[in-house]
Amino acid sequence: MEEFNQAQDGNPYRVRLSARRANGFEDLANRLSSEDSGADIVIGYGYDLAFMDRGEYLSRQGGMLAINRKRDPGRVLTQGPLCDGCAPAGEESREQRMVPILWQPALLAWNETWAQELGLEGKVRSIAALREQTRAASQALLEDNIYENNGAGGLLLSHSPESALAWYTAFGGAFDPALAYPKVSHAEMDESLRFLKQLFLENRAWNSGYLSDQAYFAQRWTLLYEAQLTDIPLQLGQMGYYSNQDTWLLLPYPSSNGEGSISLESVAAAVKSSDQARQQAAWSFVRYLLSAKAQNALAELSWLWPVIGQPAEVAPGFAARYPQWASALSPQTRISFAPETKNWAISRLVVQDAVGRVYGLDPQYFGNILISLDATLEEMEKRND
Image 1: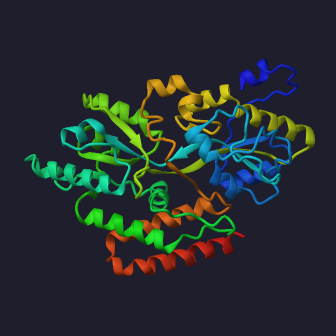
Image 2: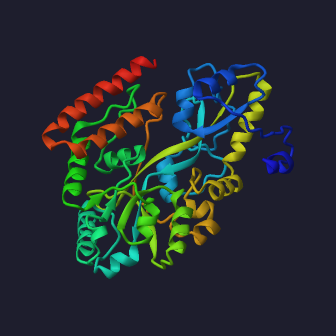
Image 3: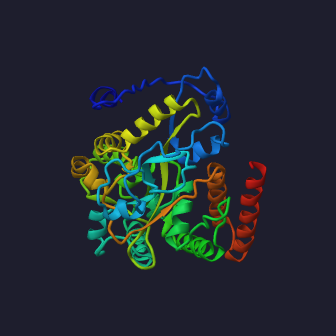
């Protein structure tokens, strides 16, 4: 922010940061609509901003954010080239109210050293490799004469909204962009549910709330766990605490073709509807957040991925210091984006709940879960329309 205020040649605008409290998103929306709120820019998770906006609080981009060229954000993330100053969504509708400035991926943390000691080869990028490696780790803990860790060792489940979406997309699931609400494909969702259920029944997947995922990982109680980029500093701390020198990486979720799958949600910026001059100033700052220098700084501050290019290209020093940070990406990795529609903040929790129900039911009832999921997602759209 200081660089924007001081180092922009010919920049007539200045930005001031102030921290304020709001009692939920309805209160935040009301504050934004207030003439004396003093706020022009809001930064938050994309699904939260979408839920808050009803078409009257946030400004339309309307050409105020100069976009350099049209591009595929998934391709830019995995292959580049660096697009300094570009908005990640490309040249889409001028009605766009939110601009992603960072990506939050769903990933798997994997202990490479332990996998090698178990005689396993290669990273876990395919469904078959995940089954093989989780079986080997679980079996190793059954044979180590430590009763307390029996049943652990494979994949530690988080039951998070991010993981529910990630498993769905890992099996080829997608959302129809033509629909106003996120409707899942039954075939892919059913396949992912059956896979998770079977993995759990075979003791290759497990869950526990006694210790943190990072602590279990550092003690070799689990070979993999469902992770996010923000887990990196936590995991590094736990590895030091337990004097563990193992090499570990973050990987994409496995896929049938062995290339891996990553689902993304965004941190986005939005501008309050106000007079033309204030909106132009605010959008100018948003554009600055998409510059290579600002994206590098944002990545280091948040641990999230930049949106203007490959993470290792945008923040090479950070990627070199923390090899786990960009280890999940390859040119062939399938990239999927969450349907951050106005109700995704709630819908993602509904999908999470549906996936969590499979562990207590027989597979013959999964069809009922999917029917209930469809009805609930549609009802949420009607209720919040």
